[in-house]
Length: 215
Image (cartoon, rainbow, N blue to C red; front, side, top):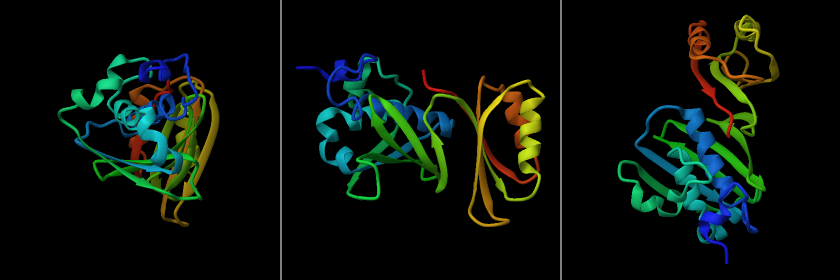
């Protein structure tokens, strides 16, 4: 029988890597997106995550991930005994519109990050605070939220290009014309915090985060 540790190891031994390694990576991506220290996190697990995840360590993996543990860390199996300064909770739901292995990660009641574990330890982040994204952790990514207005794409891309960094892909979403919008740029190499500060300085930008790719 495989231990929890062997299931969530980089080798991903066993039939439930989506419930364990994938859970850790979802938590890590949420941490990379939110960036800030936090004191409270709630996980809403859907469908198979909700019904069978407990036995596969999904609850431990998600919590360990948001705390910065990687899939090969032996501390994951004892994470509930280790955590002292974070208030964490779990809810369970069924929703046929969601992926079988789906979760909402709600941090400090400020940010909701929704994602799926799609198999073999691979993940996909689908939305951040209701804005559509498609992030799999394979690229360093610059994410921002701002007031929708003309010229924002060119301003941000110009800052990136001046660093001689290639943009692999770019995606925008908005709540309504002139409302709140989001943009994320997948990059071939990471940008420095100086670039983040330049993007923050653009008028009507309300949020910027530099998301490191998963190891």
